[in-house]
Amino acid sequence: MKRLQVVGAGITGLLTALKLHKDYEITMIDLGNDPRMSQNLSGATYSGLDARHISFTETTPWTSQVRLDLIMKPSAEGGWLCIPKNKLTNFDKEWISQFKRAADNNKLHKENTLKVVELNKKGIEEWEKLAKEYDFLKPITDEIVMPIICRSKEDLLSEFDFESSLDSRCKLYENDKNNLDTTGYFTLYGKSYLIKTLSINLINYLESQGVNFRWNESYSKGKTDIIVWCSGVSPQASGILKRFNILFGGVVGCWVLVDNQGITEACKIYGPEPINYLNLTPYEDKLFISGGYGFVGTRIYSEAILLAQPIMEAMIRELKNWFPKVEIKEKAFCIRPATPTGVPILKRENLDTTPIIFAVGHCAGGFTQAPYTANEVAKEVSYLD
Ligand SMILES: Cc1cc2nc3c(=O)[nH]c(=O)nc-3n(C[C@H](O)[C@H](O)[C@H](O)COP(=O)(O)OP(=O)(O)OC[C@H]3O[C@@H](n4cnc5c(N)ncnc54)[C@H](O)[C@@H]3O)c2cc1C
Image (cartoon, rainbow, N blue to C red):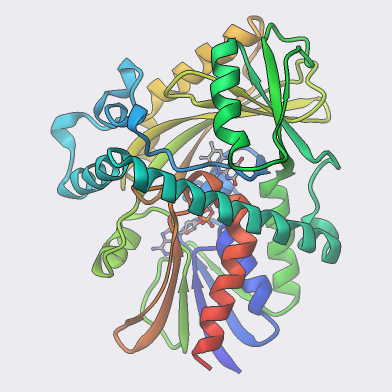
């Protein structure tokens, strides 16, 4: 059996291993701790709170002309830049300049948006197949709609116009379903999952099938026939990726856990920058809420979360506009591995003499896309046989 080393045991790496474990001897290597034993803070899959949504616009590229200036506006002033301007490295500057190039080109932005929507739709189909095959990969509810709630009519119509042109399943409702003070909502096809729980079940299953996990380790050259690189943001990963002209940096997002505020189904509330959306996932008596964007380059987690405080503050302020008496039970930061355009990278190269397949930079839709990405990686691996 050929040996395959997967670098990064986030959702992308895990589903890749699930796809290939019958035909390859797989070793998974992850910089973070085993999430079953303690907290693993080094990747987007484990560092946030549990819940994630899938929908076809989850989430379209964040480059767009309206956001051109946001990337250089400090987060304390409502922008996305968490790093002080005088501390930007050449790497950060290159990322920002590629972001601006994509954001300033409407045609490119549209192309990128369609690419991401397509990936999301394919990811959703694959999640549906996985749920039929494995009980532990099921969503937490059977709902298949995701309401997007808007407070003003202007937001409602502009967001609906944008999303409905991407998928005919969008429907507009001009009333208030959740008893929030809103103008109305529209729905997308969408579901919600508990991603940490699901990933831990996946790790247990893969181990039972003979997959070997090495936690607390970063990639080092070893005996393997093929490398699959699904890492998140880390200085070492960035160094290797840069050798192959892959540029990605961390985009921080925030999570809070509160008591359920009477929300009966998962939904998204459209909001101001740097929040963009409040993602609400009710589960039993809990309500998980995520949102916010902030660029933190390749800073390690402990540094990134200090830089990202203004994003968390902005999210909590926005949350209190909706639920004035809400009490925050838990807070968490989570760093999405993102290319400047928001479009992930899948490509095959050689690292010295070993074939290496990169599947990185999924940003805000990485969970949605992961099973499709895993299939594409598997195809690339099969070309090497
Ligand atoms: C607030 C927030 C909300 C989100 N909500 C959604 C949502 O609703 N729907 C959705 O589809 N997506 C969502 N996402 C995005 C999604 O969580 C991520 O895109 C996805 O988890 C990325 O998975 P990954 O496996 O590609 O990367 P990661 O989860 O980042 O995993 C990569 C792994 O690589 C490891 N690593 C890094 N460097 C090295 C190295 N040198 N050697 C070895 N290992 C290394 C890390 O430890 C990490 O575990 C959200 C993200 C955030 C931040």
